[in-house]
Length: 280
Image 1 (spheres, helix red, strand yellow):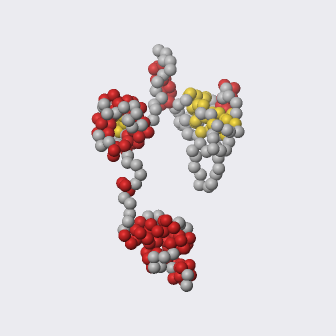
Image 2 (cartoon, helix red, strand yellow; image 1 turned 90 degrees about the vertical axis):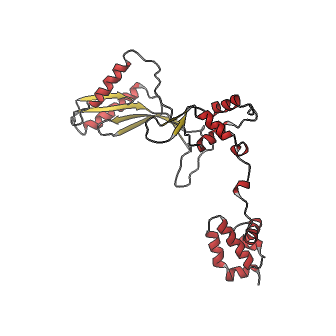
Image 3 (cartoon, one colour; image 1 turned 30 degrees about the horizontal axis):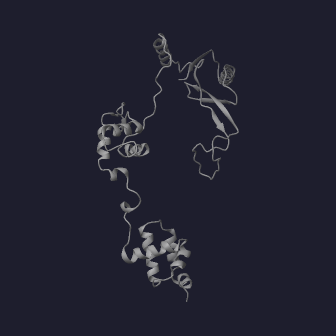
């Protein structure tokens, strides 16, 4: 009786169970045990049944017999911090001068006002054994900072391009008007308007995700056309109205969007006053 016939008669369920198992030590030992029960023969046949290769099955048999298992720390190249045990303490010493905590005290996350490029220069300038050629690269330093618990923070848009003397008073007036919104008065409606980033339309991925299989172009530089969204937010009802144009979002286009919004609101009631905030 051939090995294939033996497997089909006596080990068919065993093969199905092995195929369902996740890759790991348990699966390897199960494959090795099967080969042992077959008398240490039939490596190619078993590999064919489980959808693997001869070398893999042979390795599983060796693990089952001799307990051979390569340790994770013996595989591949060592990390930079493993080759240079002084690297982490030195990075921590440099970073300690720049670190700060969450300014809102909501989390224990640490931030550093230090880029990997600057950190690399600090290592080269402060320690003689690091040179431009021998010092670890920026990507490695970026990974080490993440491993140490330091995170990127969002860039805050707070620098004013041009500030006039009346700027503070203007914002005080805006904030007072926001607080004085008459939510119960249906004849007054308050909106905020804002332009959004131009969006490309086409077979693009833009690092998106989908539950079903979708294909996109391998380069996002080729697209059918682009649209410019213009948004209106009703500050009373939190309703959002977005209109897109394939040309420039000029003043005429914005006025038409606001007119369409007013027509929509007039169908719901009588509007006597409209308050508009810009980019709130």
